[in-house]
Each structure stands twice: as structure tokens, then as C-alpha cells.
Length: 100
Image (cartoon, rainbow, N blue to C red; front, side, top):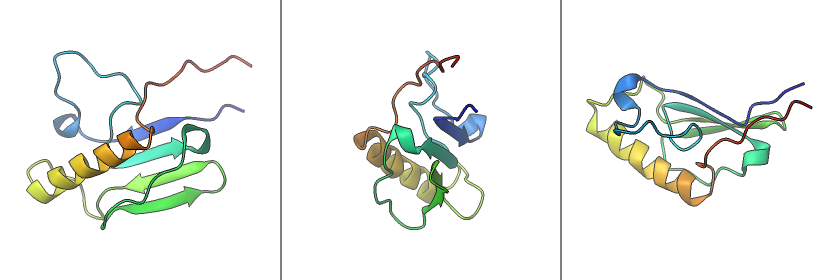
């Protein structure tokens, strides 16, 4: 059975706006999943919700309401959480899945 290392749910408006498309695994979104193999999610500020997914990984939800780039509090929270996740080593490029 294949397992996933990283996943996000976000909108085009909140995805990285760079000239070069960022590599999957290196950016964050409104809802994120990190496999246990990717690392441990650090403590995150309120109102971020962090939930274990059995022993498989962790689900992170930035806000209980729908994330909006027009809300400055959401944008500030996303920046803070991104920095914390990056500092914990969770935002790194995905590696190709083996065919085992």
C-alpha cells in the first residue's frame, strides 16, 4: 500500500506567486497533511488545529473558517505557520515514490 508524504488544500490566490513554480512539498496551504515519516509538526499558534491521523501523520488546519487572502489576519497566520513548518524541516521537496 502506498502512503502519501504531503498534501495541501489551498486556492490559486493563496498559492505561491513566483515566476518559477515552487516544488511540491515546499509550500503550505489552508489544510495540510504531513506523513509521520516527514517529521513532527511543531507547536502552532491559535487558531491552528493540529490532529493526528492514526499513526500515519498529522493534519493541520490554519483556520476554522474558509481561508481568504483578503483577510490580513489569515495572511499573517499563514506566514507565521509557514515559517514554523519550514524551521521544523517539514517543507522540503517531495522525493519520488519507490515502486516497491
